[in-house]
Image (cartoon, rainbow, N blue to C red; front, side):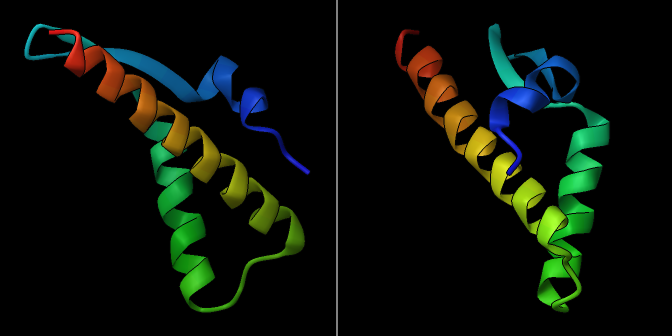
Amino acid sequence: MISPQSLLGTGIKVEKVDNLRLFKFTDELQSRLEDLLENNKTGLLTLEEEAELNAIGELDRIFTYLNSLLIAQQ
């Protein structure tokens, strides 16, 4: 199983958007997510890729939550 924490070192960036600093995926991780989602639609994911997709999805939920907290503080 892949943990979301394993993606933190290379898969995230902080980007300034309208005077806020928000967590975003790097271009590479975003591209990988899109590839995995496409393969998932066609049923071509391996078990390892499914675990990777789940980890990225969890990280996305965490970022959404953190970014909403940052926005609410403004």
